[in-house]
Length: 83
Image (cartoon, rainbow, N blue to C red; front, side):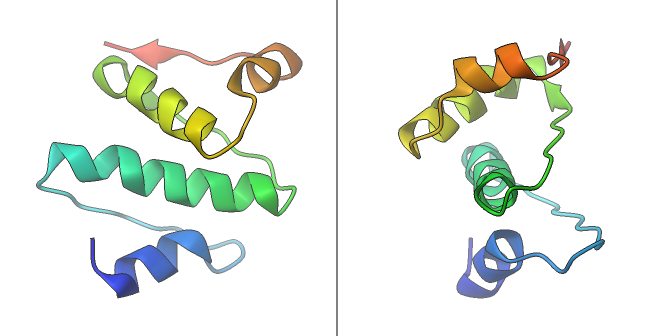
């Protein structure tokens, strides 16, 4: 991921929409974590619709960033990882 892509994900425009095409499976988790952690830190609601094969790695990345993922899962309506 280049610095421009990281900046867009870490500081998205309010009410904006980002399409992040990727060719490297290792970068998708990094991109989703960067984007969602920025929203959580700003006190915004974050909804992730994640393919099952990416779910655990994204949860782990968020945990490493210092988020109590289990607490978020219990306070929200829940989450679903799709196959």
